Image (tube, rainbow, N blue to C red; front, top):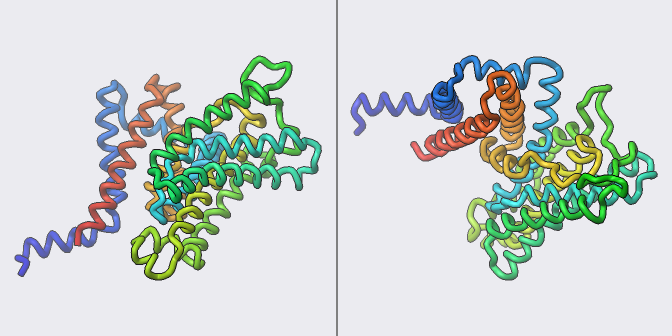
Length: 347
């Protein structure tokens, strides 16, 4: 039997268990504050600058939401893959290839009406990312090649392919920079209500509900989660595990490609050699921080974006390197995941 003190501590733990990730985030911010103090900054002032830089006005909020959009779309794709225990580490390359495929359509058919051209470039970007991720899936299923290594290596191929395309075959004829000609206005995603916000954000929000319905209210979602839960049990249930793995990988790659072409179509309006702020890698952390749940991923994407935007203000106002935000991001992810893992292990 448990003694009274043991029962008391167990009772306290059960009450705190749902808040373990939040407690982890608070501890991460406290530790980050100590590091900021050592760097010569006032932690409270630094956090205030970051908060105001991300949410201090309409311009700051707009910038935060714009950066959150690709993180959210990629994070939702990673949620699908990780729920199936498909370790896709290639979102960055899939993002680039999706941007390339969508850009080819935009540059080839610039005179199509907006209502036709925008859906075409979004479909092309999605298919490009899906097919790029399928390379790793096919190699895994046919030859048993490690998915983590394969998707990771495909990142570099995809990025270099886009850099070559922007520098040589697609470069603007009279230009000197590694970038294509500007997209026609018909190929640029329209903005919302005269702001810098755009319809790609609406697509991202619709995907939150779509991914939730897919994973928890469709037979396909059940198959994906069953494969992720236990492969042998899924096979005994008659689920085609290889097919499920390939589908999960292609869906996550497709969403990364979609994020790529949305970002290029609105933010850059042309294909460039550098079109990502490490969104592909950050999207993986967003999915994990969001506990592989669409609503959690939505919240985590805004948090990550706020840290990215706030870091710029930190650098300008207090002359603290923007890389400090990366340290804070890493600490938040580690402590939140540690708190979540601890709450799942303790009875």
